[in-house]
Amino acid sequence: MTERTLDAARQEEFAGRMLQVLNDSCLGHLCSLGHRAGLFDVMSGLPPATSARIAEAAGLDERYVREWLGGMTVGGIVEYAPEDGGYRLPPEHAAALSRAAGTDNMAALMQYLAMMGDVEDEVLTAFRAGGGVPYSLYPHFQDVQAEETARVYDAALIDTIAPLVPGLADQLRSGIDALDIGTGQGRAVNLLARAFPASRFVGADISEAGIAVARAEAARWGLDNARFEVADTAELAGSYDLITAFDVIHDLARPARTLAAVANGLRDDGVFLMGEIAASSELSENIGHPLGPTLYALSVFSCMTVSLAEGGAGLGTAWGRQTALRMLREAGFGDVVTREVPGDILNVYYVARKG
Ligand SMILES: C[S@@+](CC[C@H](N)C(=O)[O-])C[C@H]1O[C@@H](n2cnc3c(N)ncnc32)[C@H](O)[C@@H]1O
Image 1 (spheres, rainbow, N blue to C red):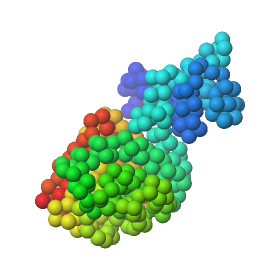
Image 2 (image 1 turned 90 degrees about the vertical axis):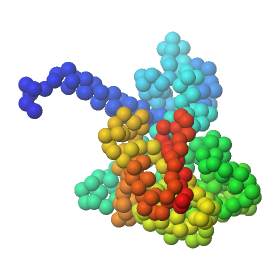
Image 3 (image 1 turned 120 degrees about the vertical axis):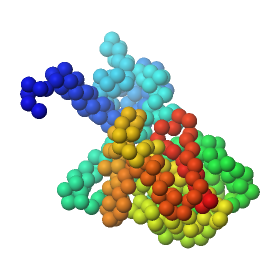
Image 4 (image 1 turned 60 degrees about the vertical axis):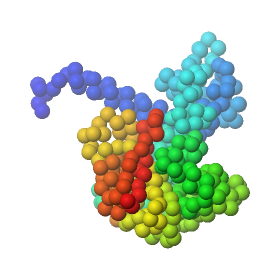
């Protein structure tokens, strides 16, 4: 395109948008820090306070807190009164930033920004040479992931997600065998085991660190019906009435083989509950997705890339409904319905039976 054909207004508008992207990206990093340092939690319990008071309440260094508050103020997250040096986190903002906000806490999600930065050099190398980045190079992956999903499971697993499978709660109450693949730090398994003591639960993951945390939590909660194994989902042993996979299949190196192993490991009337990212397999249908850029960024920096590191399928975070349904069918699931949780823009649940 020559200079004469440029739409000047469009160019100007786009440059402004890019400036906003830069500022918002920086705010995102500051929000991640604020979450990790406990600053939003402290501020949500304080009246307007000076940086010294906030730093003291949070047990942090005042100079750093003051600089962080500067970013929060110019970014419109915190209010500042220059006459008395008071900073205030409005309750409407705390409702999207503090730990007390539970699943509405967006600051917890901002931790993924730093996680992506941790591996940018390695991802760039993979852009040039192919391959991927192994889990071992993500220092915070298990912790960030577990924190993010634990709050969803704490709030919704027993009362909202499990009931997506008709009759499942009754079966769990009577006593069935269940397996969660790619369990991470195992919160889903431990919650189910605590809620349904007559059922027996196994959680499996390749991450030794994740399984160690899962076992420790099961011990702390005194659970004798939850067991955890370091295992590859593509090589499942045993037979189960229920198999779950939450946010796992698209990350795998061998997703087709895993889905076949799941079908094989399910008893005839068993059910596979697959929580996955709510997206379309058609890129054009993901334009306007409320988390669109986040999904593709997480894919490039993590989901697709850990799979490609093992020479895997690299399905990507937005592998989408159409591909998921096809792969479930190919694995032997003849009866699949999709269910959604109202208000959850991230996940879709596939309730799959061999049919
Ligand atoms: C995105 S995390 C989801 C963890 C957990 N289900 C949750 O909801 O927090 C994906 C998990 O899959 C595990 N994983 C990846 N490949 C695996 C494999 N081949 N066998 C077992 N687990 C695997 C990872 O270690 C990681 O814990």
